[in-house]
Length: 129
Image (cartoon, rainbow, N blue to C red; front, side, top):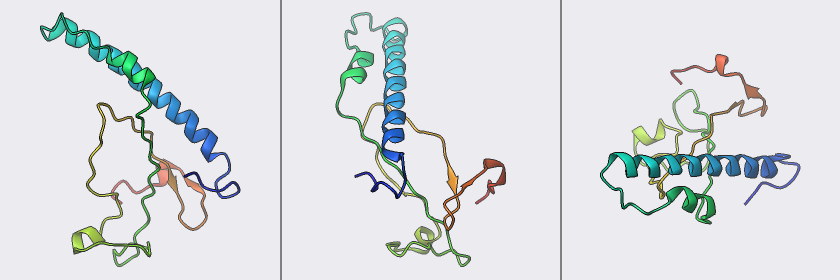
């Protein structure tokens, strides 16, 4: 579900545009994998066209992930934290998950101030955070 208009204006349209671009890139990559397999893996009779399959598939998933900031004591600022161990509590990342496809396209990261919503330039982001 997309956020209501007024909450993050333009997110749905821009998200769909980015998703289509990512899907197109995956289809191109899959086409190159097809060529590589045929030419270098002894599979000249390989007749699967993953590039075409990636172009027409409807089984595409997209996720917008938000990694919430940590408080100074290392605890998550998120009120819905379900961490069960100290190690999990110290980490605001999504945690272990299983991608369910042949290819996973990842967009670049974007850092946003949790309180103001302003974008933080990458040059100001602590690489050790």
